[in-house]
Length: 254
Picture 1 (cartoon, rainbow, N blue to C red):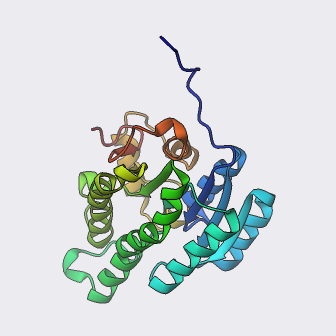
Picture 2: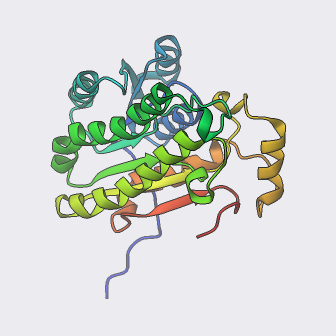
Picture 3: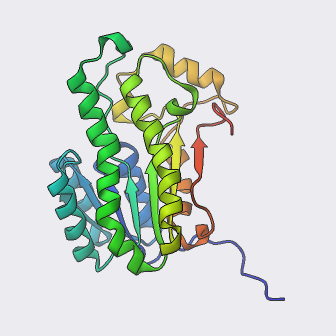
């Protein structure tokens, strides 16, 4: 009987696109990927931040502007990223917006709902479709959708965002079944409330609610999430697909 070597995460030479990679969790993913030997394209609408991050990360990173609301821009961005990298082994659908500001469901404007859905749901679908030829050619293609544990416990006064992340989780499962025959895995990571720029507006009471509800009672930081994402992008995760992994210190347990 042949035994495999000890478990390793192989990312050297892997070609990965991270949407919404200019700051926050996306930037943490890009930094960790480059450090692990991957080549990364960062896309975002925050052009100065995206370019600055790519420059700081050196030859392993490249920035491309891409608005997830614009289907043509998503298609063009994926093609440009694959051309720059010489192919594509992984896609991290990280770009997302909240835009609800703690409003109740009866206070939401339709335009806000539509905008959240365009970025958080339609955008990942269109990015994944555009990435398919390259991921299939890779032979070990990976899609990692960044969801949220808010969709697992039903966070109040955040309905559009929660609904969009719930849709992304459902899409993950359906996409996994559809793309399995192409040797493309599709998984979702559902982080808890993480200390990044985008969560600075969150009331302290909500942060405290999370801290007290976690099995590991402390603030969540980006580095708590990166290892899971890197594993799911690696060849070591070849038989993991259609899964939703809550990474939240035990606030939500499956």
